[in-house]
Structures are given as structure tokens and as C-alpha cells.
Length: 419
Image (cartoon, rainbow, N blue to C red; front, side, top):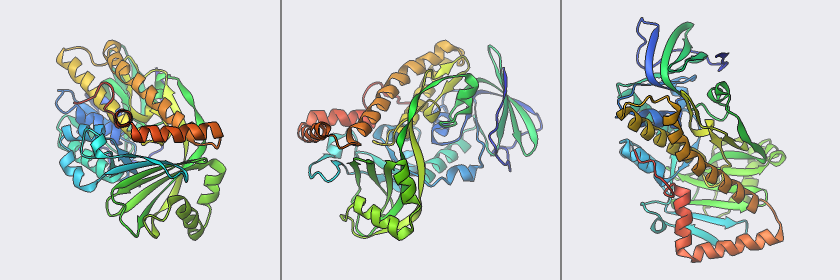
């Protein structure tokens, strides 16, 4: 099968390790997408004995320049720790000492503390730049990883045992043969489309506005998830006493807010944010993105696997999206490492199904949980209002229940992909 890809990138250099004169190369695993999830998989395979190629349409600098912060779960932190990255990124992230969930103006709330968690923080706040630069640096120092940046994937042709990738950079072409092709190329995955893997899901009636603020008072390493009828409003503390806001609202309302002058926008935001941290200063201009739920019918087929947003997307409530992808990457790495040690063909469907069985059910449960949370709180129906506020009281006062919920939210429920 031969298909064309249109990734629309302007190439300036092909990869950080120079391409030699030979225009045909081979690798065991080819990962399309050098974001956090793709590079996590590459680095997690460092002791597997497998050679890895990472192919990215953007330049290395542009891939690291994304203005975004994430809520990183303790399980994701443990995966980074086992890869030797935590000492490098730890000083540049925020350890959440409290996560406070509340229902609009209702006075009662659920508070999660490190004492409810198996580690020293409830969650962590990390900027994209910090994570991706650490992963890029580690990948550079692993001789079995070759990273191709500013490189377009133009053709794919698969046989029963081999996949041929045609790459283009600076007008030059190179053929790369691989045993396993991994799609880590996001929600609009070209690899998923090439494989003909169908998806289920829907677009929400909401969009998200994100911006970074500097409050006058300390954020005290506290994260907030405030549920309003129009959608969740999250405040994520990040280093430098800054906070990233993720403001969910119906599409028309979000577009209208984004079109406001800065003073008017900040006035609306302050009313939603509250005055507990004093005056607020905008550090980065607001951006908007639509919200959708998507789940692939399959994660694998012979010679192909999907991880991260290529396989699933969820509502941002609860900060689950990137963490699911990191666990996908660690789980796939563990499956491939074990298969290679047993001299099994890593692209065989029997091997890849082990990864799919491991991750697909858990991811489905997380998708369902985030969808339920959003629908339960994004309304004014009195029976649901009574139910959720009663539920808040129960969760806050029944400690074993609170700790079980936190284990699910932080990735410690079920099989753990420790590498």
C-alpha cells in the first residue's frame, strides 16, 4: 500500500545526527512525532537493544517552543524518574501541595493533599519547554536513537515483515526501513489514517481558553479545579509564582471572550478566578482550542502501533490527556523490550496486542470518567446539583474513597507501566 502524506513543513536540517551518504537506512522502531509522548517512548527503549528513529516535521527548537504547561501525574513523574530525568526537571516544576475541587460558588470543596497520595505531591505543574528539552537532551546522548527534525514523511509502503518510509529534507530523499511504525503524531494522526484505523467520539460544545498569569500573592503550590455550569475552570501553579489557566466555555462564549480587549478579558477572568491571590497580571496572551473526545477502535495492527493523542483524546478536565500518553509510551516500551529479549518479532500482531490489551481498557475508563465529570458539572439541573454537592461532602469525609479516587487520577490504579 502506498499513500501520500502532506505534513506541510519547511525543512532546514534533517536530524541532529548527520545523515551519511547512504540514502537507505534501517531501524527497529520508527516513531512519527517528537513530542513529549514520542520522545518518552524513544528514551524508554534505551536499554532494550532496539534501534530507534524519531521523525518530526518541525525543527528541534520549534518542537520545544510550545507555550503550554501540563498537570503531570505522580505516575508520569515516576516514569521520568526511572529514565533518569527527574533530577534534571524536578527543580523546574511545581509540586502541588493541594488540589482543591469545588462546584462554582458552593462553599464546600474536596481537597487532596500529599498525605492522600503515595508520593510527595498530589500532582506536578510542568511547562512543555522543560519536559521536551530534557527528553531531547537524553535522546541525543543515546547512540541507538536517531532523531530526524524538519523532515517530511512522504510515502509508506508495507510488507509482511518490513515497512519502508520515504523521508524528505532540504529537497533530499532518504529511505528508512523499520520493523515497527509508531504513530505519536497527535489527534489528526497521519499514521492512524494510513492504517485505516477508525475512531469513535464527538466534539464537545465547548472550547478551552488558556493563558498564563502572575498573581500578586503566592499561589502556595495549590491547584484549583472549579466546576461552573459553562465548563471547568482550572488554575495550575507553575514555577516563578505563575499560574496557567484552562478556562472551558461554550464555543460562542469562548470566541467572544477571546475577541475582547485585554482589560475587559481580564475583568471577566478575575470574576471567575477569585481574589484569593490578589491582583492578576497577564504573562502570555490567551489562546483557544476546541475540545473533543476520541478513541481509536484499535491501537495496533501488524507493524503499526498508536500512542498518545493518536490513539485517544479526552476533555482536559482532571489533567489526564498527556499522562495517558506517557503511560502508553512506557507500556509499549516494556512490551517491546520483553519481546525483543525473547527474540520475538516486535512488529508481530501477537506482540502488539499485549500493549493494546494493557492500555485500551484503562484509557477507555479515563475517557468515560472525564466525560462524566464534564457533563455532571456543566449544567444547572437541580437533581444533579444536589447529587454532586452531596458527593463532594462524601468524598471529602470518607478518606479511603478519596484516596482511591486519587489513585485512579494519578495513574496508580491498575497495572503500572514501570520501565
